[in-house]
Image (cartoon, rainbow, N blue to C red; front, side):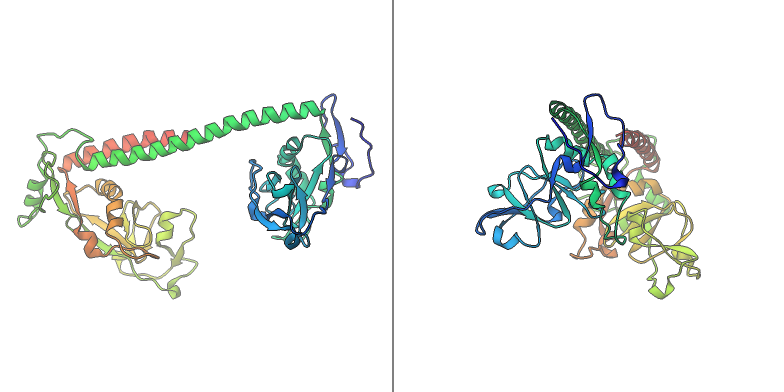
Length: 412
């Protein structure tokens, strides 16, 4: 292949890196036709591609909307099957929004002017698509951004004058085949990783289910039965009707959620209470998202709203869930219960029970935009209560298994 070099802008004139023997380093403009125009009849169906239809990352995939050429021939870029499109605006450029157009209706298309179109000249387009997605190329492009933040675009020279490597054509094909072989392997690993993560989560769920039904650890005949413990603490205690729990594990009993703990709803803080200093106010979004910012207050309120490390919380609105708080002293906002278990139930055991029962809590909830479960409904739900000593063994076993599963998850 014979290449005729053209003059190019000074800041791109140097060869970026040493190329292997048999390769050349040439300006982009020697290998591509920049932003070509199409001449086709107005009634022709074509593919229309806004930026949202170009996938980011390494896949190089795109989608299109079918339009009539008359509707899109003006005010948009033109392209055809086999052309490369590269986003020139930030952050789409850094997010690797680039593609080789294919399967366009009648071979032609049009799209957002934020795409630069490069038509390959006797080269393997896919090799250069991968090059344009490389960290080196992205770094070169971001050196010469123009415009204000949020509307920055790369310098035109990155698509014309930048020196890029030109391997022999046969080697371009071999390189692409090797890249795609490794990408396929990486995809398999990622799919396997996702599958293993799902298995780990399902395993945790199954273990919790076994735990709350008395099938995780063996019963010990020396344990004081839960019913006797409850009667000893409260002589007036009356157990729930076992209903469909016809075969309870030995020593277990049924009890309502409302009879295992005291539930204190958080305070209804108002915007005027929020400040930038003082103790944090725990809202539901703070429980669901570690990165969510906290509202704070330096004021003092009733001690029942004060939360400490190790306290058990239950969010009963928006996103139901149970949590052990470990964020230091804080105030509790409304829509969250502080849960103070009675002496006959281990706090950590109740935490695990509530996690296992989350589907049932949602079943009893109301609302479409902001789901919630009323305190009465919540407290009337039944749970199975094992002997206190068995609760401790269950918690110990759950934590041992959970630690091992977390190690597996962390290694994926």
